[in-house]
Amino acid sequence: MTTETEDGVGFRSRRGPILIALMLSTGLVAIDSTIVATAVPSIVDDVGGFTSFPWLFSAYLLAQAVSVPVYAKLSDVLGRKPIILSGIGLFLLGSVLCGLAWSMPALIAFRVLQGLGAGAVQPVAITIAGDIYTLAERAKVQGYLASVWAVSSVVGPTLGGVFSSLGIWRWIFLINIPLCLLAGWMLVRTFHEDVERKKHRIDYLGAGLLTISLSLLILGALEGGQAWAWNSSISIAVFAAGALLFAAFLLVERKAAEPVLPPWVVSRRLLATTAMISFGVGAVMLGLTSYVPTFLEGSLQVSPVLAGLALAALTLGWPLSASQAGRFYLRIGFRKTAMIGISITVIGTAVLAFTASSPNVLLVAAACFTVGLGLGLVATPSLIAAQSSVEWNERGVVTGTNLFARSIGSSIGVAVFGAVANAIYANGPGDGPDPRTTIVASSAVFSAVLISAALTVIAVLAMPATHDKAATARMDANAGGDANAGGDANAGAAHAQNQELS
Image (cartoon, rainbow, N blue to C red; front, side, top):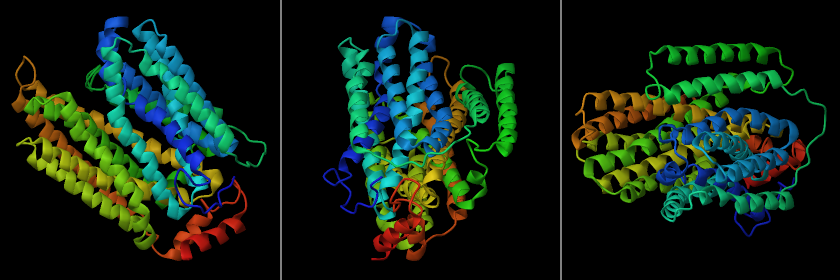
């Protein structure tokens, strides 16, 4: 793998084609997370199943979340390239089948297939970026990848609305066909890795137990209080079964030769704290994404487009700060950079919580932009710190664990915020939420998001400090300075010293 190239970060650099392929692959996942929402009315009119349409989102997110740890481990065992290409292939197959779906149950099943593909694409793309770029370069690269999500947050709903209005909703899935083929072709042509071939014992039992247990636990969090009451027998059964299977998974992992989720992932302080930070980032992100549009539309009666633009300020702030995070963590360290970021996040969420009683579109947009700036300075340094602390054959698991923690934070956060909002709506007028009830409910949710951000401060404070240049150089010797995938430590260390101490 040609990771020692020092020709800068950008599309015209030697690694530019790989970066474009990674952004295109990430774009598949990002756009598909937003494009379906605006097309739901057309989909329901065509295939029916109005009461089941929320599963179009839940099934996709569930399949993506539970498969991330498995794919991440496989990328450390088999290499990044076969796993990300397999993910793109699954996503392509799922997209084709979704475009041909004849009923809502079939469409939901094919969305699961898409989710399984997305579960491989996103973490492995980020892991590849950690492989081929140095510590100093990774923040800029994360800014490029984050910008994909910013663009998708605008392009996705717009395309979905256009296809829906033209009566061709199936093209929201079929448009993925050329994109998947292009991304796969570019990766095959430009990305090459040299993986040490040796016999592995894949932990099939552990992977199965982890997938089923997490599916049940996330399902319980997503559907609790909506599909069924929290204290209902089905809710208790789902959580109990998930907890028992997860306990069995932990026992299996202690004896597995190559565990799918190694115990060291949670025993190392840096990895444990960065995972907790990612959990908090997920909760804050989804809390605002889920409730800011509802707040503006319900309280001020603004159009969905305007509400969406206010929320888009969040996804614009993230890539801006993420791309500049490297300037901070190379000078003051990962923890101090993350501390600055989480402080900005707390300020942004506090503005939302304390001004919700007097709704204002511009103020909400400014607060979302502030939160985005903060999250970019939290998520990027914490992820890069975790990646840089391990060698090539562990980086996939570490990246996957970090992203999985973010997914769990999103799921639990949405469940908690939903319970808070629903409790207030239940005491409102019986003919639907009025503006006043919406304001009260949204204010309570934003206060809960503020608490989530404040709790994340604790995780950042617990993160070990790695602030001196020599330390960052040693970390880079384990990461982007590798001359080969999983290979030459001496060459990596020399490259790290040249890159970080010059």
